[in-house]
Length: 172
Image 1 (cartoon, rainbow, N blue to C red):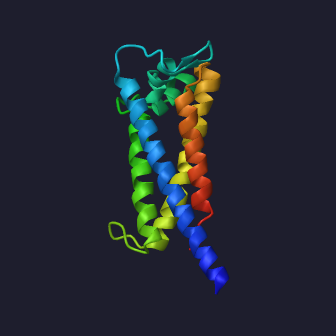
Image 2: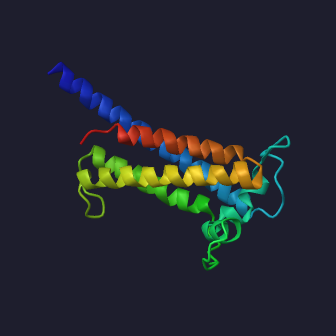
């Protein structure tokens, strides 16, 4: 009986951490959105020659259509250049809002928008896998194309990895 209680406490603590990390990721993403649209370059996130959020966060790769830009200009693939001027940080807000809400619903064993908790957990795991792949893609852009890093983008990547580890550690 004692082991069952400890597992439940661990599970509850894991969901609490998932929600805390999600809130931090949302706040960081909101800051990146603000910086993306701010017309004046911020000195707040410029650290030497290799770290400049302005370069990274205002580059063509910082929007959703940056993937098409990468495929067309950098890889030379015949893809249409779409104009989707939505910052990837805005997608991050939506992803982590869903993670936050879904984690709360799974913890309480309740449906979220008609989706049962077991299915929600599968969706979260897929979402985190895709988020890690996208974070690796963006890191590649920083390291090999822009030759510049965004410390806040890297911090967001770390939060993605932490949440992924937590979510993949959740048992049904």
